[in-house]
Amino acid sequence: MCFDLQSRLAARRAEHLYRQRPLLETPQQPEATVDGERLLAFCSNDYLGLANHPEVIAAMQQGAAKWGVGGGASHLVIGHSTPHHELEEALAEFTGRPRALLFSTGYMANLAAVTALVGQGDTVLEDRLNHASLLDAGLLSGARFSRYLHNDAENLGKRLAKASGNTLVVTDGVFSMDGDLADLPTLCAEAKKRNAWVMVDDAHGFGPLGGSGGGIVEHFGLGIDDVQVLVGTLGKAFGTAGAFVAGSEELIETLIQFARPYIYTTSQPPAVACATLKSLELLRGESWRREHLSRLIARFRRGAADIGLTLMDSSTPIQPILVGSSERALALSAALKARGILVGAIRPPTVPVGSARLRVTFSALHSEAQVERLLDILAECWNRLAEEPEADA
Image (cartoon, rainbow, N blue to C red; front, side, top):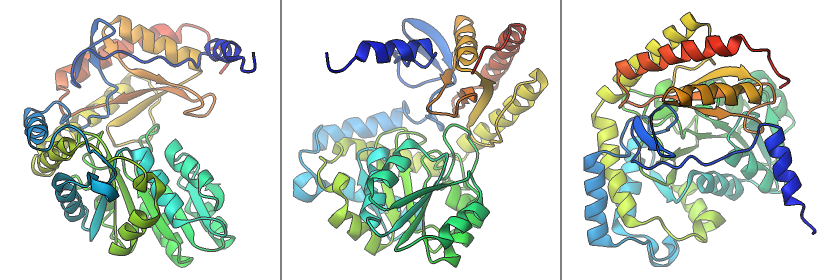
């Protein structure tokens, strides 16, 4: 046999890195049925609680009744429907940019933007903790690819000084495994010194951050002159599916003409765009969701400190608990599940070796009582785990 897949899988299990898919048997909601068990879930990216919102569901049903259930073709053939166009216009207005372009996934949006903008002879500089889709895009672009130290503008500046050709600085807005924010004002200022463009993937920032949910760019009061390429995903706080890139007229036309992941992909179902138009309306109009989320996060961080948990520097709905070894992270996750709490264990290679963690995430649909329940059970399980010896990471 040419490919010894059994040995690869066995090694994965032995290293406590084997991944399994939980089977969700209910819609996205705090109390969910997973693998036949009723659990209180703190692991969804449905930050504003819109994935199961009745008005969003109704918009999708009405959209399907009018527009059908398939895109039919790529946007450039006959797959660009009126709902797609209306959503692009709404997202452009929402982000304060001339235009926006829809994609079927966030991975595709990142791959499209980077590979269409830089190539051989150019430079792409990325935060070393960027999402895998951004790192893959940099590697596949053919440009000179380098990773600067996490959130380190000084280190970025040194790499910018050695850059050649068109230079693109790429960063997450909110880092998905740590929950911290990119230091955008400083990073953008450093990029401007070298006439480099900045691209931000704000997948986890849209919705929770900014006065109107406009994400990290709104949070810091930055504009298109600071962040030329702005990416957002629609499957997290928006509660639907897909992604978008927002920017100048010239940027969007360049992506339409040169971005292979856009050109050669069937458009998302028009009904999804109908649903997203409604979720965008709710995201912008119902500020109570962000306010409630902020209160839950603050309460959790106070309670976690009282327990003695090690949290990351995050003010976002992503609140990772640093555990250390993969084995202990799995053990803590299993202990919580046995008590009715679902929190995923994040292990290498998603995070560095020795920094396995439980990635706790909050939704605007969580109640204060549910957060108190999480803290009570965490304290019990953590104290029990602390009595056991630490295994090798």
